[in-house]
Image (tube, rainbow over all chains, first blue to last red; front, side, top):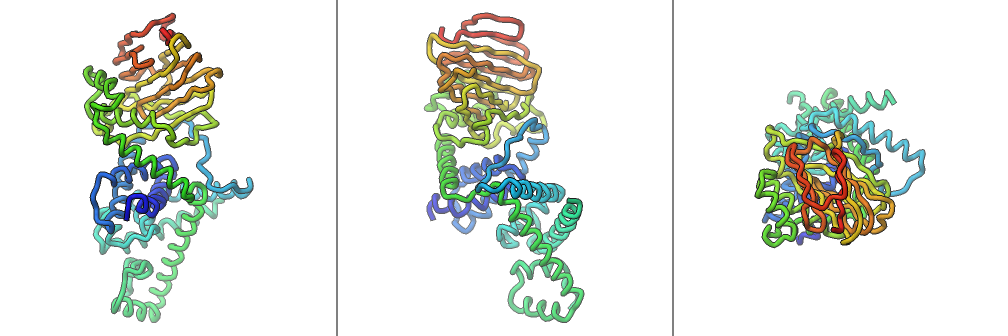
Length: 161
Length: 278
C-alpha cells in the first residue's frame, strides 16, 4: 500500500485515538502528523505500521504531557472544530456530554485510558500489550477493570448532571 | 470449571478466546449465574464506553477526505523540510550565527531550522486563530535541567493569522524566541518592549492589510509588514531573543543583556523603536 493510501486508512484512527486520549484537537493533529512524519523515515512491514503508529503517538502524548505540566494555558476559549453545523441547543447538550466524558477519562490512570482507547480502535490484545508495555495475558483483566472503573465514574457523573 | 473471571470474560467479548476454550467458556457461562451476570455487566460497560466515545467524537472528528488530504500534505511538507540539509536551507545562516554564540544548543538549532523552513510554506494549517486572532499560551521561560531533551520535541505546528491588527503569541523553546520581520524598505516602525508578562506577543496595526503572522514554537514570522507598524512584546525573563528585519539583526537579548543592533528611532526604558526601512 502506498503512503497516500496508508495515510487515508490510518490517519483518522490515530487522530481519533489521540483526541480521545488528550481531549485536545490541536495536540491530536500535531501528534498524529508527527507520527506519520516519523513513519516516512521507517521501513516497516505493512502489518506492523498501525501498532507502530500508535506506539509513537502514545509516546509523543506521554512526552508532551510531561512538558505541559510546566505550561499553563491562559486562554484557549475558541471552540474545537465542528465537523457539521447543528442547532444551538443540541450543541450545548453535546458539549455537556463531551465534557462529562472528558472528566471521566481524565480521572482514569493513563494506562487505563490507553488500554480502553486502543481496544476501541480494534487492536488485538497482543498489539495492545506491546504498545502499553504489559503482558498479553493480563490485557483482558486490565481492560475489564478499566471498563468497570470508567462505567462507575461515568454513571456517577451522569447522575450529578 | 471455576468461575471464569473478568479477564477471560473480557477476552471472550473481544474475540480473543477461540476454539475449544471458547466452547468450554460458553458452556460454563450458560450454566453459571455468577459468570453470566459478570459477562452481562462487562458487555454493558463496554457498550457504555463505546457510546460515550461516539458522543465525544461528534465534536471534532476528522471526517472529510479534504481534511485528511490537507493533513497528508502537511506531513509530506514537514518531512521534506526536516530532511533539508542545514547548509542549503535559507534560514540556516541565521541559526548558524546564533549557534556560534552561547544561545542555543545544536539540537535546538536543528529543530528551529526545520520549524523556520516550515513557517514560510504557504498553505499551513489555518487553525482556530483565524478570525479571532489571539491564542495566548504561556511561555516556557527557562530551560529545565530535568528535561534536557526538550529541544528535540516534535516540529511545532505553524499557525497563521491573516487578520489585520492581529495579535499572536509566540511560545519560546528553552527560553528563546526569534522574530523575523519582512517589510518594505523606507516604511514602518517596529516597537519592541520588554514586559513582565509571561506572554510573548506580536501586534500589528489595523492598516496592515497584507500582513501575515506565522507562528511556530520559538519563532514568529511577520511577513509583508509594508508601511504598517508592529509591536513586539517580549517577556523580560526570556533567556535569548533575536529580532531580525529583512535578514538583518535588529535586537539580541542574551539573559539580562540587551544589544540593539538596528537603526533606532527612539528608546524609552524597556521600549525601543526601530526604523525598519533604514
